[in-house]
Length: 261
Image (cartoon, rainbow, N blue to C red; front, side):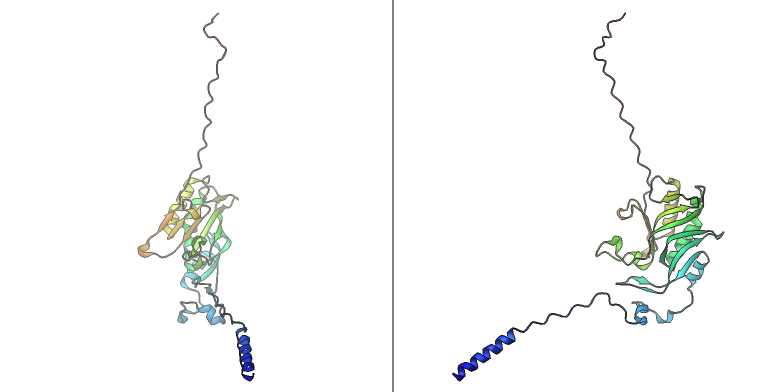
């Protein structure tokens, strides 16, 4: 009897142990871990501590002479987004100090902002002025944004993720006219001139004819081997309006042309 009771107690003990909940695995840490200190936030993957200074860079000095731009702290984002020497570009200044507003203000690397300012001052604004009114502003469709190319999941990071790209939607003239750069009804010689000068100035120019850029012009300063450039911007003309089909000749039913008076 004692032996039977011992076996029963042992069995109950084993049942109790088996009923204990199985511990769940620890949750995986997120891919992007928020920095815990200013040092972590400022560092990123390529920090050169000897280069840290509160003095403007040579690019900042050049840009200040031809643009209204506010220097920004180093930007750090998920994956490899962000970068150093970033600015918020509010306007480009013409030699006579008139402004070409950037709306909304664009967050760019200083190098990209400098390339944009040079293009607007030296080429785009003089070409736009041939329409009879000075260039007063450009519409910023997208500047810095931590995302993949064309927002396709799994694709490489866009140059927008480093602040090296700007999407331009339209120009605005001082007389109030708005010129969409992809609109085939906008002056064709102007659009051809803008395309040619942009393709000389920037490393990548994408517009109509490239599936993801039918509504805006993408400009960037990505560095490629041997200075290779991409220029894909079809300057289109308005579709021709088909002429109405000729009306069929009216039937002369019931008229006898052989009966003459």
